[in-house]
Length: 113
Length: 115
Figure 1 (tube, one colour):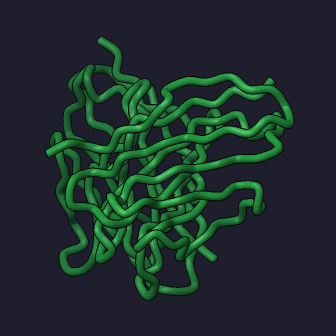
Figure 2 (tube, rainbow over the protein chains, first blue to last red):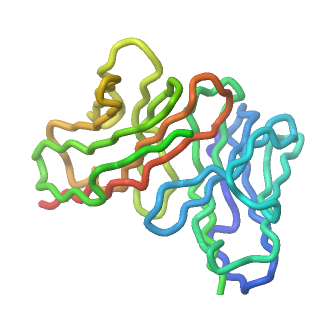
Figure 3 (cartoon, rainbow over the protein chains, first blue to last red):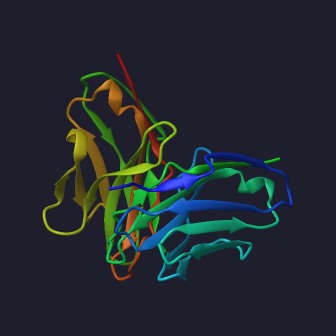
């Protein structure tokens, strides 16, 4: 059974650029959610994807967008990067029936200069 | 809306000592409660959960937590800690009436176990 894998692990961008982060969900899981964890903070929910559609979103602007593919893998896209977007981005996979038991990847650390 | 407050940002303890990490929550609806652990340079791992039933729940690595509805608390305890328990611990809630993976996390408690 493979766990949740994310890529890249680290990346550096400049303000105004765009970034794409990738996530492969755990085998058998059909739901993917993304979280932003700023330094010294708890993770904050960005959005969730199920059956290739977004079906839940936190308090993040539209420049944060995502995709889910038929194999349940997912992408997080962030446009027009701002300095405050510097954070660890965590992907979590689960079953649609989850009551909150999530399986997290190790994250992608984004630095915006 | 829900909120989670972890009352201590840092907890230093000596090896083999007991520890309690405190978590209070606020919600207008019923919630499920969780503790997740984050080891350095890793993602989060579920430690334990309270969904219903007995208010004392046991998790991995010898940790346990007690749900107190009247005090809206879900404190995490371990009777004897090891060096390997050094990590960041996050308390989280999810509304019962919703579905999916939207958790509200606290800001975390850094547990440091010293020899």
